[in-house]
Amino acid sequence: MTENPFTLFDHWFAEARANELNDSNAMALATVDAEGQPSLRMVLLKGHGPEGFIFYTNQQSRKARELTVNPHAALLFHWKSLRRQIRIEGHITPVDPAIADAYFATRSRDSQLGAWASDQSRPLDRRETFEARFDEMQARFAGQDVPRPPHWSGYRVTPERIEFWQDREHRLHERRLFTRTDDGWDEGLLYP
Image (cartoon, rainbow, N blue to C red; front, side, top):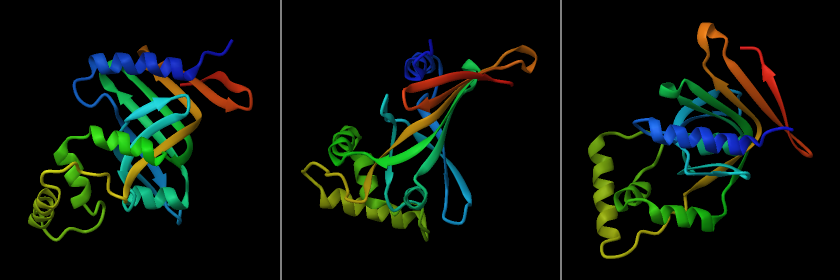
């Protein structure tokens, strides 16, 4: 019987949260633009379950523009202290606005204001310009809750493939691959 890859992910992620010193939820996100040029950056996992893996960003950022033209992405978790990796490949969909609103409300006030102040991924003439915009947002929202900006939301990666990589001595690593099927998941092994 095939193991549920989300149950295995939950187990490994719990171990990472207990053992990784910084950002156990950090994951590399790979996207591809309209010309086929790949791009890679670190983002933070902010939700996960059988429906997929969620992260948030400015929808005018480079990553969001790339996801608009090619709604497929790859994720990589690398927990060096545990000597483990998880690779995920799948289709991207925007999260429901209510989910984005709920998550945005949990962010620190300064992070909320920063989302309003930043033109993420676009050229910045100097740091003082961004700091001045941040100050403007502090004044704009003084004494009130900061709403989610209309250009800021989340994306869900719905996996088609999930690979669990465990380091072993002499580079005889263990690689377990789960591939989505119409009926659930197929599980197999890969040579290291």
